[in-house]
Image 1 (cartoon, rainbow, N blue to C red):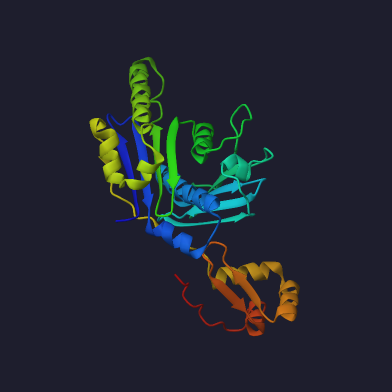
Image 2 (cartoon, rainbow, N blue to C red):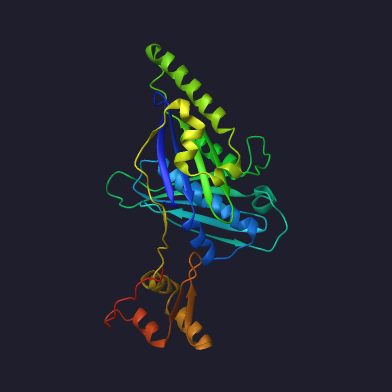
Amino acid sequence: MTDTLLKFMLGAGHVRGVVVRLESVWREMRKRRQHDALVQNLLGEMTAAAALLAGSLKFDGSLVLQIQGDGPLRLAVAECQPDFGLRATAKAEVHGVGSLSELANAHGMGRCVITLDPRTKDQGQQPYQGIVALADADGQSLSDLGAVLQQYLAQSEQIPSWLMLAAGEQAACGLLLQRMPDSGGTAGTAGRDAEADEDFSRAVHLASTLGRDELLQSQPEDLLRKLFWQEAPRVFSPQSPHFHCTCGKKRVADMLRMLGQDEVESVLKEQGEVDVTCEFCGARYAFDLVDAARLFRPDVNQPPAPPHPQ
């Protein structure tokens, strides 16, 4: 299995974790949308991070990770669906810089935004959006996406977390460790909480011996055995991340209706048809005069939309 996400627990259950390896998913993304190598690798890390965060949450919905930049990188987006369907895209200018701070936080205004969009709104789950600066508490720009997300997790979930991300031509990978929440802080549980702190510190120490190249070259099961063999990791059933774009003819039609009939007819008059290309997967949707007429005449029977190209 070239695309794997594993959830696991360490030792006495004080530390939980997620490890993900994306190969075919990442190759499919690279094939469909080409970006500068630096931006491409950042997108790979963001895609792995989106899968890690989704895997760490009890949440039935999509997770969207965004970098809103003020430098050469204006926007980067990675999205993970409830079944670990993944897609990503970016808008960036040509550049010669390399770090996250240079790419997206050149003027100190870059932001990381994480949005949780529940699949259904009637089961107690509500949309949520968290925003964190691409800088530490002292205002110093962070050059690593992992450090940004550790800061986000500390602020939003208030759970000590550690993660490493890496992406190359063949794979995008990530490892996340989190200390389980305190048991309540009463006198009878203080010892257990101190033990949990110690177990988390030990897990982070072991994981910190890992290099990015080793992360990229290791299969998830092998990685857990190598790093945590003394911790007796309990590994849960593997998940299978896959490439999936949620675009489609109907979604594009709804977008054109929102633009309005005058705007659509103006484009038709000038260009003869309306062409829309998906920023995520590159799929092209063309609407001619007949298609446009159907958009704004609901009484006209419309043929079923063709299957989405994969």
